[in-house]
Amino acid sequence: MKKERYFSIGSFVAFVVFASLLLSNISTTSFFVQKQAFGLENQPQSTPFPGMNLAKPIDVWSKNGVLKTTLVADYQVGKVDNKSITAELYNGSLPGPTLHVYPGDRIELNLINNLNDPTNLHFHGFHVSPANNSDNIFLEVPPGKTQHYSVYIPKNHPLGTDWYHPHLHGLTYAQVSAGLSGLLIVEGLQKLLPKPLQNITTHNFAIRDFPFDSLFTTTYNMSNTLTGHERLIVNGEINPTINIKSGETQLWRIANIGPENYVSVGLPGHKFYIIAEDGYPVWKVRQNDTLFLPSGKRFDVLVTGAGNETFGASAATHYDPLKVVNDAFNDHPLGTVIATMKVQGNQIVKPVSIIPTTLNFRGPGQGDLSNATIAAHRVLYFSSNDRDWIYTINNKTFNPNVVNEKVKLGTVEDWKLVNLDSVQSGNAHPFHIHTNHFQVMSVNGKPYNAHGLQDTVMIPTHGNVVIRIPANDFVGKTVYHCHLLFHEDYGMMGTVEWVK
Image 1: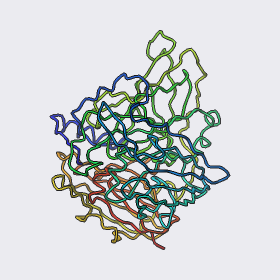
Image 2: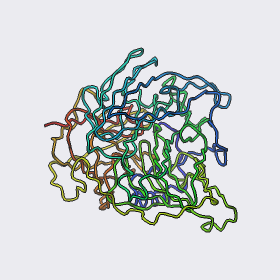
Image 3: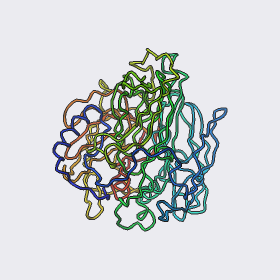
Image 4: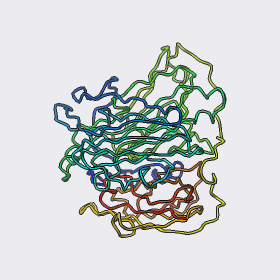
C-alpha cells in the first residue's frame, strides 16, 4: 500500500485478533493503524466542505423497466481547511447520484467525460455481461467524449447494495480518490423479509475518505496521504444524524466506496443483522456487533432502535454513535464517529419480533456450493514491492492483452488465493472479481462457514483463502484484482475470460 504505515508494538496481538475476526467475518481488514488524529468525534451534522460547493447526491430510479440517465465526470475546485482542493465528481455531487434498479431492468446511461484524462465505468457487484458496452472495463472514454452504456440486468439478479466507479487501468486509484464513485441499488431485498419488515425505512451509508491523497491525484507522484485534511464521511457529510424510533427496525445499506481505506464500524448497544453481503442476499442471517469494510465491501443490515432502558438513560431521546471500532483494523483512530443515530424515545413503536434467520432467494448459480463438482483448481500468489511500486499476481503485473485464466461457462472452480506478503508489511489484500460472486471455503486451511456468496474477501498477510467460483450466464473478458486500488493500478490485477 502506498500510504505510510507504522508497525505498532501491538502488532502481534492485533494479528491474533485479525485471525479470529477473519474466521468470524471474512470481510475484515488490515491490522495497521494510521497514527494520525483527525478530530472527527462529536462533530455536528453538516455538509463537510461548504467551500467546495458540493451538490447533494440525488436518487435516480428506473421507470417502466429502464433507467435512463447521464453521468458527467468533471472537476470541482474549492477549499478544505483553507487548502485548495480539486475534486472529480459525477454530476457535481459527492458521492455521485444513487441509481435504483430492479431485476429485469435495463440501464441506458451516457457517461460524459469532461476530465483531462480518459476514464470509463464499472458496475461493481453486478452479475451482467462484461462485454460490448455493458460492464466492460476495457472500454476507454477519451477526454471530451461520451460513451453510452447498455446494461441488461437478469431477472434473477442478486438484490442489495452495489456501486459504480471508474476502472481505467492506471487511473482508477486517482479518479476514485478524487471523488468519482456512487451507490447502485438493486431493489427488492425487503420483499424477502417477513411482511412486518417489508415497508421499513431504509438509509444509505456511502462511506469514504475525502479529500484522499489529493497530491497524488494531480501529480501522480509519491505523497504522504495523511495530510490532516481527510474526513471520514457518509453520503458527503460529516457525522450525519439518522433518526429512528425506539423499537423501530430499519434497513441500513452500508458501503465502503473509497479507493483503499479500511473501516470497521460498530453501534454500541445495538446489533447488526446481516441480510445481504456484497449485494447478494445471504442464505443464513447472522448477527454481528461490528462490520469490517475494506474498499469495495457492502453490507445490508437490519438495525433496531434500542429503548432508554437498555442504557439506563432518563432522557426520552438519546444519541448513539456509529463509530470506528477495533483500532488495529482501521485507517482512522478508534472512536471516530462517522454517523449518529438519534433514538426518539418519545416515539415508541412496538418492536418487530420476527427477525428472519434465513432468506428465500435463488439467484444465479446453485446457492450453497459446498457439494458442487469442481472442474478446476487454480492458485494465485499475491506479492508486493512497496519500494518500487510493483504489485504482482503469480509474479506478473497486469497486461490487458493477456488472458490469465479461462473458465468454462456452467462450471465451478476452486481458487486458492495466497498472500506472500509478511505480517510486518501490513499488505492484507482485499480480493475482488467481476461478473460472478463466490463462496469462501477456507481461511488459512481452516473450513469457513459461509452464510452466502460475496465478491470481496480479505487475504490475510502470509496466509491464504480458498474461494469457490461458479461461472454463470455470461461470456467475455473481465478482471480480478486487489481492491486497494493503488495496488491494482500498479499491477495486482489479472484477466479472466468466461468461455463457452
